[in-house]
Structures are given as structure tokens and as C-alpha cells.
Length: 496
Ligand SMILES: [Zn+2]
Image (cartoon, rainbow, N blue to C red; front, side, top):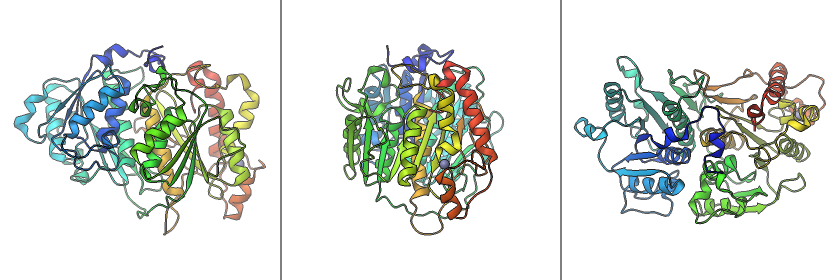
């Protein structure tokens, strides 16, 4: 099995087309780091990285430059990292200043231009260049609490098409990873358009200062977060790789990783942290991931345990990240969380989508009440995938990165410091590449619960805390879950 096996399982996938593509990436900050990691993993064959800054002291989020200080260009480090992540990729650093029209002729005729520069002058020049030469341009902007992704406008470029709010702002890893995942998925769809996919026509916003995370307008006040917690990350695979990195970048004090698998070649196109050490194949995922993340942020206490989480011991953690791919593990985690009154962050991905929900006792409903896990398992025991080895599902790095980004940012809503608690969506937040505006609440934004007469301690905690009453959302959520699961082999991996 090749490293592309899981993405080649996607209907109409054409890996050769991606390997023959030439993609120019402008910028070298955190957004470019996450994008280059995803693009190399996907197998964008020819990457040109345009940036004229030196690595002084790598900013938080420039994780591919960790351990490097000064003396080298960011573009050089990014190109070297891309080739390390995927040896099939040829990556060239190009050290010249974007934002000068005369330099643009160097650009030539790539298949795709990605702008991560946070610079409206570059953005305008690149849009014009893209329009003149018929090249798709995808722009990603990121600053603290905000990200925005757009595609080159088709008509006259007006002021509103640009993102001046981001000019000169430092990239932030937690908005950058989300923008990068959106940009990389948009870029892949532009290079290799799968049935049903349409180019992005409206800007996509991800906004940590909007209660639902997807409105453009800020209505919340920024708060600091309490990092003095212990997170258990269950699963060190495609989701766990990014979640562990992002929690460590947040500075979460203690992280325990649990996974009983060893690394295989077929993991490497999504589980990119494993490519950052020598000879990873055959080594335990949890231990290697802990080692790589510890190198990136030596300030966090991180431990990898080669074992499956069986619901008996969370090693003292006070929050659990569910990064596995089966309903049964979700139920084990949910039962543990209910028994110990702990929050759980649930993430799931499929080919075109990613989704995320955080259960916090007293603030919303548990995973079973939201997703009807137990009844679904009882009704369809044979349909539950049990690990990717037994039944590999199609999977791509982009939706995993996006789900991990959404999920790790819920940490901020759970452990904010000071002020009013920031709202936590009571429903699933979903990324859907096939939806015009990409980030959606497919089940409505109201607080859901499976059924009014359902007996679950999470209802009691909610009632004690003031309670919520709407029930429609989760009924739809549960029905959709059951329907999707029984549809096809491809759909079976969904919501995982
Ligand atoms: Zn419940």
C-alpha cells in the first residue's frame, strides 16, 4: 500500500494529477507552515515557496522551523520540510518580495497560487495576475482569533474583495491552521475537482469572537485561557497528530496520548508529525507523537502510552479529546466522562467534511444524548468500523487538520479566564466542502437533546445549571447519523 492509499480510495481521485501540479505559496508565517504540511502530504508535486524573510526566532505556530534560529530564509526551511514530509514533492524556495508588480513576471504559469501573506497589496497583485493569466488564486488570512479564506473574484476587483484587517498582523497558529486547512482543501478542489465540488464564491470566516464561531462580526471580548489542565488525547492518528500539536502550541500543561497502533507507511500522508523523525515506520504512534511534539514545545509535559483507552484509566486527565474513528470508542469515552463529570471534545471527518462538538457537563448535552451512540451501536453493530487496518476508509489530511483546529479551539471556550463564560455551541459545527459557505450548523444552532424523556445525568447537570429545553436538533442529528452509517462503505467512515 502506498502512502496515498487512503486518499486514492476517494472516488475519482487522481493522484498523478496532483503530483504533476505546480503550486506557488506566498508567505512564510504559521498559515504557510500548516498549508505546506497539508499540501506536501496531499502530494502537490511541485511547490514554490515565495517569501523573503529570515527565520529570526520562529513564531509560535511556525512548527516546521522549530529548533532553527536565524541565518536561513523561512522559504528554505519550508521547502526542506515539504520534501521531508513527502519525498515525492519537489519544493523550491524563492526569495523575492511579493508586492512589487515588476517581480511578478517570475511567477510564470503555475496551476494554482496560494496567498498567505496577510498583505493586501500582494493580495491585489496576485488576484490581478490570476485573472490575467487564468490561474486560480486562493487567499488565506489569519490573525489572533480570526481567519478568512477567499478565492480570486471573477469580475472587477473591489475594495471589499481584499482583507486589509489582516495587514501586518502576526499569524496565530489556532486561526492559521483552520485557514490553512480551508485553503488546502480549496486548492486541492481547484487542481482536482471531484464531482459535486464548486469553487468558493463567498468569503469563509472563522471567528473566535463570534458566539457561533462563523459570523464575521465580533461580539465577544477576548479572554486569556487557563492552560493548567491535563488533556487526554485518545488516538494518535490523523486527528490526534494535529490535536496534540495544537494543544502543545496553546501551552496546555499536561498532555497524555493513548494509542495502541504502530506507524505504517499508509499513515504518512495524513499523520505528518511522524515524518518529522527518522525511520518512524513500525514505532508506536503515541510515543513518537509525544517525542515530536515535545521537541516543538519543550515547555509542556507530554507522555505517549501505547495502549487503547478502555474506559478504566484516564491517567488523571481532566479533559478528553476523542481522536479515534469508531462509535464504540466514542461511547467508552462518553461513559467515562459522565462517570467523572469531565468535558469531551469530539471530532470527526470524512472526505468532504469535518465536524466538531464539545460536551461540557452543565453547559450542553453529552455525546450519547447528541448522537444517539448507544442505540446506533446496538442497532448496527456490524457497521461500526473497528480501526483503519480492518476496514480502511477514504481520508485526507485537510479535513483532519480542520476538525483538529475546530476541536482544539474549543479548549478556549471551556477554560477561558475571567469574564462571562464564552458560549459553547450546543450543536455540531461542520465544515462541508459541498456547501456554498463551507462552515455550517447542519442541525440548527439551538441546543439539542435526543428526547425529552431520555434519562441521562447530563440532563440533571444542565437543569442544575439553568437548563436548556430544545430537543429537535439532536433527533435530526441522530437520524442523519444512522442514515449516513447505513448508506455505503464510504459513508461508514463518516462522523469518525
Ligand atoms: Zn447525556
